[in-house]
Amino acid sequence: MNQLPKHKKLILFDGVCNLCNSTVQYVIKHDKKDVFRFAALQSDVGKDIIQKYNIDTSKTDSILLYSNENGLKIKSTAALHIAKHLGFPNNMMVVFLIIPAFIRNWVYNYIAKNRYKWYGKREACMIPTPELRAKFLD
Image 1 (cartoon, rainbow, N blue to C red):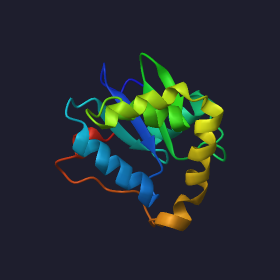
Image 2: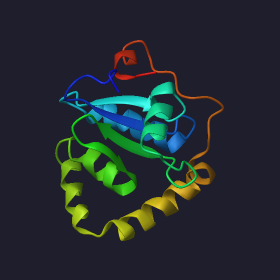
Image 3: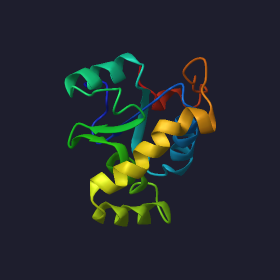
Image 4: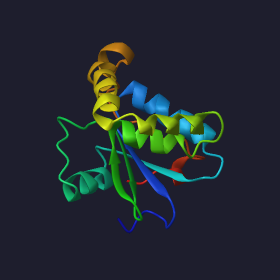
């Protein structure tokens, strides 16, 4: 993962999922400290991390959080650790980490399982605007 700049965190997302793309747009808007970089799970970087961590994409296929320092976080844990860096009031969501992961992930999995039905799906991965291109890894 030598593409990821030091002290940055990489959000891997389902590039064809409308909910995931909206989430990425929200994170970009609220990432005032420029903590995050992004890549689609379908990208080469995404495939490398999936392979490195032996992720079963039939069970984990929406948002992953990777950093060189902390490795990989998945599902609700990834989402809450992302929120932690987005400033007030988003950072308050970190209190939900006290809830056991199996409970948080039950809710997360329910939403992830229904995301295409509820929010739709794109034909292809999102293409970032030229201004945002630097935040995306291939």
